Length: 116
Length: 113
Image 1 (cartoon, one colour):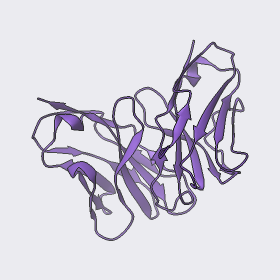
Image 2 (cartoon, chains in turn yellow, blue):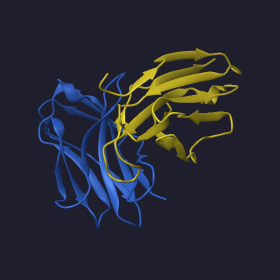
Image 3 (cartoon, one colour):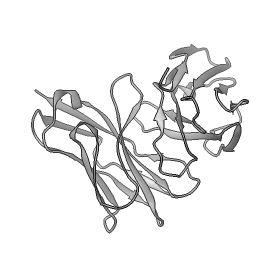
């Protein structure tokens, strides 16, 4: 497809369950970002990859959150032992150039996670 | 660290009326500024961005924004809104260099027929 693709679109997890969220960026895009958007809030930065290298993970809220992009394309955000406060929309985005260069960042439709 | 303040959480406006959505940022260095729109159940879509040069930036769907360095503002405007403009609007800032895009909390624009 032409855009950033995320799956699953909707996920309901029981508290304590592990979840994995997948992101397919736009083909050829160097940079990949994960953001977390709580209800009624703006997106908050989680982590950033340039190709396969995770250059910034300063926004990950705890060590239960882990992201990888092993071949520099598809990325997975994993949340271990989910808690209710993890309920949010997880947005993936990609861009053709590096972070902070002013280039446009393209967002996927998000993965809605509800922890019950 | 940079931050973004969107002064209005909700803005109701009648169809065909003008609208201004306010955005202020804080940063001590040069920045790039963005406005994104989020329609219900959709991802964020870029409306416009300011990188350098002319302070008046025109975007898609008839929107424009003006960068004011002295007031550290980047307000979004449209002279005549349509029902289809109903959405959430996010202002965002990025400092030049290797820093992430920082978003405001958003303004919900509701256009009333």
